[in-house]
Image (cartoon, rainbow, N blue to C red; front, side, top):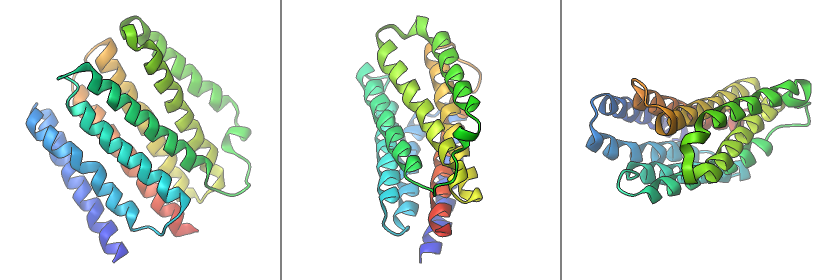
Length: 225
């Protein structure tokens, strides 16, 4: 039963993803508003099929908060507060992902301890992005900066876990975290710096990949234990 749920749950997820991306390309705001809120519940169904654990609670919390963030951002054009609500929802989601990444694995040496320069690279990227965006942030300087720091910490937490878990799970989790950074970076550039061609498509595609890779990595992690 669990294998059935996972197989068809992911199939349903990718059908909705592809349909939503078509809606984005066609500039169908109604179609996007209808399809986007279906994405996280489909991933939640897959996570629910995994045996109960603390890590499962963290991932479920992150996905639920991501669902709320998706809904809030659909309505951001109607009132600026919806963007703030979405920002806070995803910030909390990243905190739960950080707790998840830091709570998995054995006592193996962290990838970040082996290669500490990775930490510097991540924060250089963070600072460069904030430098680019800062003149356009207005009253959002503090919340966007806080979000960028938490987002970077989420990626570092995933990298920290890489050597401590099975290789296939590690690859999926780190890829998902990196995709999340890319998606949120594209969103920030599009919103605060300059719109670019097919921005909505690339933001949504990388976001869907990010969440899929993290959930798939979590499932691999629990299967390998």
